[in-house]
Image (cartoon, one colour):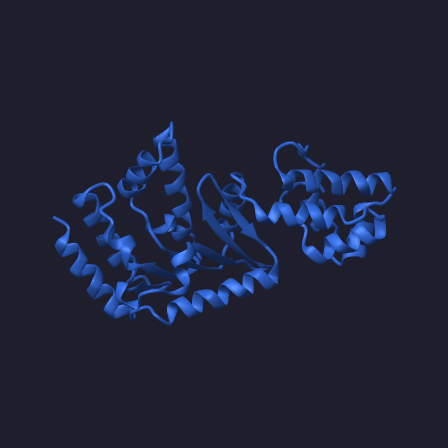
Length: 269
């Protein structure tokens, strides 16, 4: 097993949590194997938590607080870490994208990053005031390498109609983006559906989110201004999986979604 990388507790609450897990373990004279046995995971998972790769779960935090008599230290840190946004979450999320088997993405205001054209992505990044736009566009397009893999993931996409009507980059860029969505919607591993405006108020109006399934686990990612949050707790992930299905109940069929995209394209002049 590779040596533990240095985790700076000043970087974020999550880094502080990872740092303190290792510190308290060592102070108590325990190995990763012993801690793994206590919280019911593998030694590799403890290594990953201490490295900041994985996140501690609530019940695990409560067990450690009881075993080490920390007066709720880990549960409290976890509570506040989960309540905030962390700019480093996207990096971890992209690592999950690379090994995903299935993706469920709900897009509210803009097209999901895995389905963006370079021109559309550039317009968004320029509007966001990023310094090195070229590098950011390249990074976003690199995420789409998952589609050229030997066994590409399956993707279920729900897109709010407002995201299709927002003329990001101007009419020409938007027509190209809509044309790309039409092409993607014909892929055998993609199920793309539009939530029409006539659906009115629905569960998805409070923000976009993405669910990713790998061979070992499921995670959820929530974007936010200046950061985001990656949820690994299975109960919370299941709650958002149910939310995705409920939003989908108001979506058009795949065929009707294509027809609506074509109609919107015709108005982009």
